[in-house]
Amino acid sequence: MSFWKNKKVVVTGGAGFLGAPVVEILRERGAEVFVPRRRDYNLIHLEDGLRCFAEHRPEMVIHSAAFYGGIWINQMYPAKIYYENLMMATNVIEACRLSGVQKFVGVGTACSYPGYLTGELQEDDLWNGQAHETVRNYGAVKKMMQLQCWAYKKQYGFNGIHVILTNLYGPGDSYNPDRSHVVAALIRKFVEARQNRDAAVEVWGTGRPIREFLYINDAAEAIVRAAAMYDDVEPVNIGTGIGTSIRELAETIQEVSGFAGNLTWNTEKPDGQMKKILDVRKMKAALQWQPPTSLRTGLEKTIHWYVANKNAADARE
Ligand code: GDP
Image 1 (cartoon, rainbow, N blue to C red):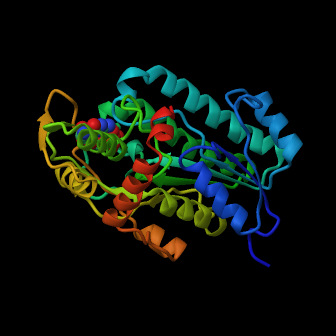
Image 2 (cartoon, rainbow, N blue to C red):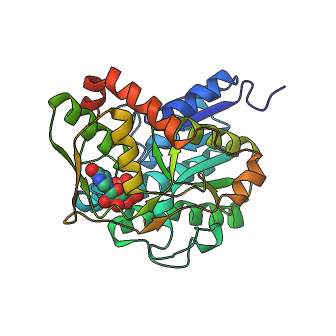
């Protein structure tokens, strides 16, 4: 019998960008998945988490809900990012413990790593320095989940894991310019510029920062694998291990979206961390897997989806 057959799983954020494909994969594999919605259970409050788990009796909880976004949302809503993410994670983990949930999967972020390291980011470096100032609060609160799982394991024998995701992109992302990450932001800009026959598209920063981009369905597959196969309280990175400069990314999106004009660089906008690439050796060994979708293929799929669903995509928060 497969690991997932009839397994009862709650996926917080299960209607969101990352949660939705996680839910889809789990259901395909036979799990019974419940997705709490905020109007019914506001997981910032411990009582709501307890009520949710009492009603749905999950064996596992995958915590994918978060208030987050690209570099700009961290400038606009630092306090909301701090409060909502910290309270939600803290209370969801406590509710899991009190409800006898067998496993908790916390979705973490590469923003948690020290912001000024130059090499590939290794799991052992997670606590070795301050996150980059542009994402300090988001990075810090997300990694508190890992600390909580460590403390709960020590005191209660609780099984909580922490997966650290690199930058994600794909269909279903936020295309709202205040909130979007670079891939969604640039796809929207280039597609609109082509439609409007604009002369130029403005890209933020210098183009020199290096990022790693993981296609959303590959991220979801990695989470499902980690949920089934990984039981160590120490974190595991999830990414491609491949770095791409923002300039190269912008030029690829320009080409795939068919925009014939120019790129201009707005250096008034922040570059953020100069290099963010995860060391994925542990992931490859523990999950027996690596992400199959190349950046080019993922961008083609995403741009195709965006053009076909532009109005709905732009209306999403
Ligand atoms: P980060 O990985 O947390 O820094 O988040 P982002 O995905 O928002 O930004 C990644 C890099 O892309 C940064 O160096 C940004 O300056 C750069 N970038 C270039 N153009 C844009 C844009 O239009 N929107 C966003 N969000 N980032 C952009």
